[in-house]
Length: 85
Image (cartoon, helix red, strand yellow):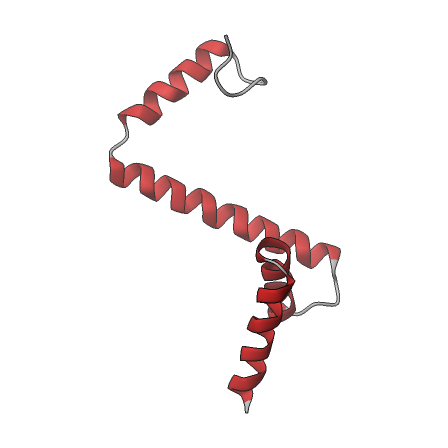
């Protein structure tokens, strides 16, 4: 029976799980942080490619909107405007 990945050889999947289980809590945390950082960077890069007219702040705003909702993106945008004053 497949546990996780349908596109990974079963023996390789078992080996990956063995290795992950052997990691310390700190190593698991660091791996999670690294993967999260990579996913966020890839997401921002995709937003930049999809909306070529956006600058860095525009990409940040779009990222917030897509991941956390328009209401929070609007609050963030308004707080950025208020900081400029």
